Image (tube, rainbow, N blue to C red):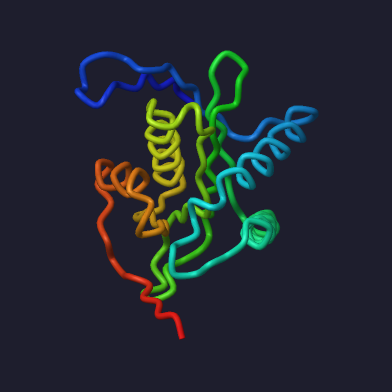
Length: 173
């Protein structure tokens, strides 16, 4: 996968040089899996909205279940790294059609960036690499879900051209 030089918000100066690759083979594959699990657990609360008062252990269990579901079907795991340090990951499902139209799509099941690297362009590089992978596979759309209150993630997706197609509405009873 290509090396991506990300830019600051002004678009002028590079912020960080990030490489994005598919999950490694052999020994590195286990390290990649461990990284995905650990980072996913550390960042999972950003996926919980304020209406549902989920505990962190419950959200972590849900993330682990999501990883099992992803592992059981066709997918690609992308790892952002710099000089050997893993910075973030993206889990891309490539055979999950849209549930309403049944049209082919790439679906980002989960994306996370190490907190100290958030805001440096790592998420942008992962998203672009995921889109490149979906294009290579002939998928005409990319979809994802984002928590309404996760403003930073929503801004990232909006800057990349994503638009709201549907909304999940919730009401506490």
